[in-house]
Amino acid sequence: MGEEGGRYGIDELADLGGVSRRTVRYYVQEGLLPAPLGVGRGRHYDRAHLDRLLRVKALQESGRSLDEIRVLLSPPPGMTRSGSGAAGRPGPAGAAALPIPPVIPRSAWRRLELAPGVELHVSNDITLPAPGRLSELAEWCRAHLLRAARTEE
Image (cartoon, rainbow, N blue to C red):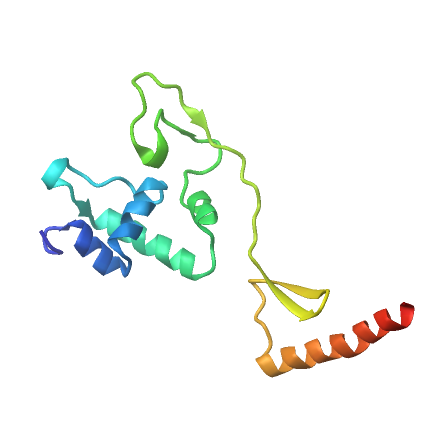
């Protein structure tokens, strides 16, 4: 096989994509990658699989969840999936098209505990300040918020 023919075994695809074989199989199972072409020992992946794998990996490295990636890489709203099961495997003959479920907005956040009972939630879109600045903020919270809580008791 190899790159010249545009056909890759799972080991080659995983190596070129910088992931493990297990990750490739998981992405196929989750519908993020199409199933391999061919059957039995002839199963292989092509350039489209590699391009998709690299896209999934890039989106994941940019902080996207697999659910967000699945939505980003799915057909545009209004289109329907043909009768297919999980991971793009063909469904029963004559299966009705399934509507694409509505997208529930998601975002990734980081939770920082600044003091006992005090948390700061920061969107992944925002760059955190240097650790020293975060330590100053945490110290301010401990000094001012905990003191205020003790005086109320």
